[in-house]
Image 1 (cartoon, rainbow, N blue to C red):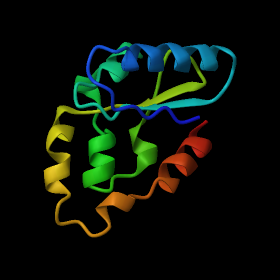
Image 2: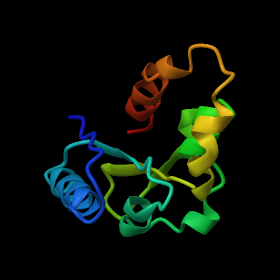
Image 3: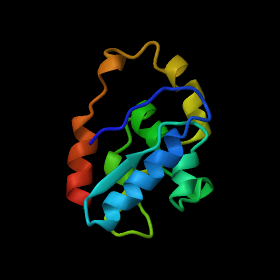
Image 4: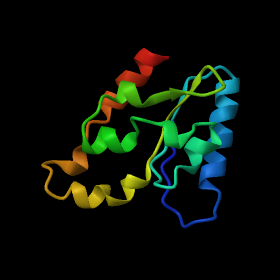
Amino acid sequence: MLWPNQKGGGVGKTTTTINLAASLATLEKKVLVIDADPQANASSGLGVDIKQSECTIYECIIDRANVQDAILDTEIDSLKVISSHINLVGAEIEMLNLPNREKKDTKRSTHAFEERI
């Protein structure tokens, strides 16, 4: 299930994502939350100390870091998260000169998650 949403602030996107993810994980479904918001509220809401995250979605996008290294555990065994970072604010500008920037490899994320869980 994919839950992309670009609505304005304060409409409950993060809260809905956290609650849905936790509910599905409690039902023993494998869940990966990819926090792509520079504020990283989904990450912190799932118990991740974002100041301790060494590899985030930012490093995966910009530096082509291994997605496997970015997947973090939560208190629920089947719920994982790839945290965000404030540097994500400037990622679009950093990607301007990258070839095929709009077609980043999403299969890497899916495969890494399946191996991790």
